[in-house]
Image 1: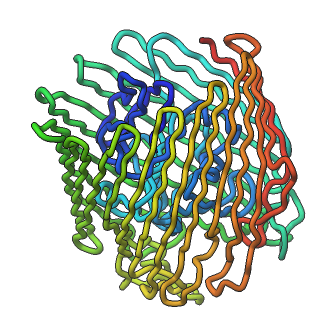
Image 2 (image 1 turned 30 degrees about the vertical axis):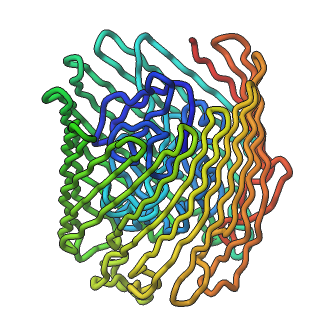
Length: 599
């Protein structure tokens, strides 16, 4: 989707480019997720959504998962309010089919296969890129549905402090601070803060303790980059968050989950020759979950991923070449004794992209050598054609796979079944076509996709029995009329189990949104309207959850160039709905905050 925005400084701590990704001379947004290389958004041959810092602040939410709820093509199911376990479905795929990258580091649980996105605070994020569609040819396992890439806040010339304090419904409190800057060739950033809420009773039915199920989270994020020569750079990024959310399992114990995430990475960029850049990155990420369902039987699941990447980007007479080597070692630990507790993945990948007159081409091939399953090769072929500066079409085909989790493979049999060491990786083949019209003021895009997943893992004990077919249409429209900006979108999803012809659980078949933003002097206003159709809680499609529509609004007032007051109201009409059967969702709520950010 072509996105015209103000110039954004993106610290691409991504394996392919830890340098600053910026905008070109005409203000076009530069993205990296779709190709692992810097690329203008209007040349991308995939569906990519970009959420910048301004949009994040306007949203008025606390965590990454809260913002992703409103993105076209994405569905979220959560077991309660802020900080509760959440599942993200991109284009109908499973939540374990979504890869999360934070500053280029893979972050997630190798036991459950899911990333703990609900524990990532928005206060540390500068930019989010969401790639919809298979991307195993770029990233390997887990990217059957797509990729969510988070860039933390970065420094620039000068000294730029920012402070924010807010209060809202359910005794929700936020206190965040960020300090960034740059001196000569050095750039730095430090962000830290705390979010907490008393919450509400998360269970809407069944056995529960009628108390408030709250959430608290503390985080710190830091990074620095040093320019050695004109195009050489070294740097590091680190992030850590510690959160706790309470939930209901019985009437005698106040159950809670402790979630701890951290990552640390270093990188070096070198210009080896004119038009030849090398990027080396190494680091480690950890996902730690402590489940205190009862006082007597805690469950602990820890994942540590050691990662290394070396990528070369080479300008050719025709197009650009990308060659890379990726290494990942995942180790699990905790209270569960797995027969196998580690695995390594070594991968080689090649990519070539070019603009040939009115044609755009992208080719990627990747071979993963997994210590458990052997080798797996995936590919991507994409083509685009521009009929005029306004009209363009694109088409692509891509294969993908997802390795079974440690729970699916090796979880001990506790009397209710256990893991299945004979599981095969899930495989997918996606085809999609799209058309785009962009006049500069108006922009329209339509995409049709058909993704078939084989050897889908389901049931307990888990087995490779199912095939799923995920078909859908995505429509988007944007217009900028002076002070008024309008964003309208809709998507239709048919996500079915091919063997039973039943819809996959918790996937709404229809969704739409309307976003209006208006600014006038010191004031800024906005309205978000989001709606989703019905969904089913069980595989037999007998437990139906109704559709819903939500209306949110915000008002910002700039007192002076340095101070701003922000007011956000969510679910204004107090709509009652469920994203997971038996779990309540927030009712009408408000949040007011004050931001100090000297210009």
